[in-house]
Image (cartoon, rainbow, N blue to C red):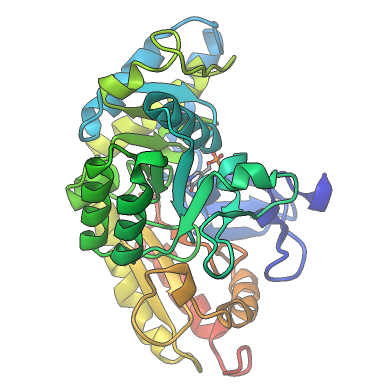
Length: 416
Ligand SMILES: *Cc1c(COP(=O)(O)O)cnc(C)c1O
């Protein structure tokens, strides 16, 4: 496997060293192949909001598997999960299941283009939307508004259809949409950007985005692959009281199996095949096992008052580690929204755009990451990835992070 991994960020390139090979997870803990246990704050990068191997999810998967994994026809659990998602999210009439977040955003963009008859799209620097060609695009230099490929293999002609704007900047956004809005099919955003630090946006910025896209008939896509069912039942849309035209889900809705979904109002979704001309399909889309895992996860979240509890767990973590961060030889604060958290290793208020992130943070994070691992605590192997809390995180797990962090921030480990 190139880099020894199936997805690049797992390879420890940002922190140095060799990735651990895992063999088991239980609740908030994971075990590597050498039998060492770690308290896990990675949560498989977002899906495991109930922790590893939650008994009800395991049972749902086993039951479904024993009755046939996939039928190539609509299934009962698929319909139930679709109904659950549609009734949970503001303004949602229909959903289509896919097998990853990448497929969800890729398909939502095709749908927006097909429905509007426009080609250009807008994304924001610092937001990640999976690895479809049109989304692997970075801001052009200087006054160039067209994007540049951020990966080899993405044709420049594709990247030119994507405009990259800074987050947190109403003026740039409004100016672009008023000048060129009638050529822009969609604006896609993580309403809670959580793939490049945790860049919590001002509600006014999102409100402006909603108002200006509506004015020019541009489809607003909320990429809630991380935030969906994590920050609230109705995701960031519920939290901010802002309804997008299309939304994408992934991670949590698959309960730890490969699932994505996208959806929106009926007048947009009716453009999708077989009702309309926008093609989209998948052999294993909506398969019984993944649907059962997603449904079991959403059922437990609902029943166990998850969003209140996750906020309480997040609050406890913040309270516990704030005094430890104060002892760091450089500025360090915890940025948090519910069960999402990020160590901002920089001075000043929490950054709200990619440009506001201190590039020194990566070097500061490296020794901290390894010291935490030595103390049995697994955080993501990159300074720019967020931490994930789950319902399985008990006070003892939070205390382990506090103690490990206190050791990691000792002057003998990190230097200012
Ligand atoms: C993880 C993620 C994706 C991509 O999902 P995959 O299942 O990894 O393809 C898209 N958007 C956001 C916001 C994500 O966090």
